[in-house]
Image (cartoon, rainbow, N blue to C red):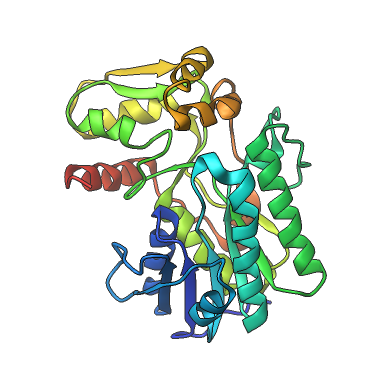
Length: 315
C-alpha cells in the first residue's frame, strides 16, 4: 500500500548540481519544505528552497543539516577524477546522517555497476563492471542496500542514464553539444552516434527521486527512472538542431581520440573506460518504475525545448 509523505515535511538534499536542483524543483511542486546542502551555502536554487552550508563529511554539520528531515537525498558527488577515493565515504556520511535522524535515504545513481552488457539494461542484472568507476558504483550500491537489509536506514535508489537538460553542462549531451548548436556550429559528440542510446532528461530524474521519497514500497530497491523512448544520439541531436532552427552539424570522437585528448584533459581521460556505452546499443529498461508509479517521462521535443531555452539564456 502506498504511503505518501505528508505535505510540508522537511526534505533535505545534499548537492546543488543539476540532479539536486531538479529534485528540489520536483519536491517544491509537491508542497514539501526543501533544504539544499552544499559546502558554500550558495546555489542557484529554485524559489522557495532553503540553502545551507555544511560539509557532509563533518558529522556534526551533517546532522545539523538533516535534523527534522523526513527524507534525505544523496545528490552530491566529488569530481569525476576522484570517484574511487572520495565517493564512497561521501555517500556513507550522508547515509549515516539519515540513519542517525531516522530519515529515509534516496540515492541518485547511474548505470555503471552493470558493466558492458548485451540487451536492455534492467535492475535484475548482476554487477559485472570491470571499470574503476563501475566497480566503485557497484560497491556503493551494495553497501547502501546492505544497510537497508540490516535495518540501519531506509533506502531507495534511483538510477539514470546519461542526462541532459537545464544546468547540465558536463555530460555527453552537455555544453559541448548545446553550446555550439545554439551558435549554429558543430556539436561535439562521442562514440557511434547512430547506435540507440537512452538519455535521461534531468527534470525526469528529479521527479523520479521525489516519487521514490514519497513511497514506502520503493524502499530496499534500485529503480531505473523513466525515460522517453530510446533514439540514436544522431536522431536526438538532429532534432535539437531542428527545434533551434539550425542546420544539423555534428562530429564524434571515438575511443582513440578520447584517449589522445586524455593526455591533456583529465575529464576526457576518465571518460575512456566508459566508452563502451557509446559504441553499441545502450538501451535502458524502465518498465519497473513505470509499472509501479506511472510514466513520468518528458517527451524528447519538450525536454530539448527546455534545454535549448536554458542555453539561450547563457546558462
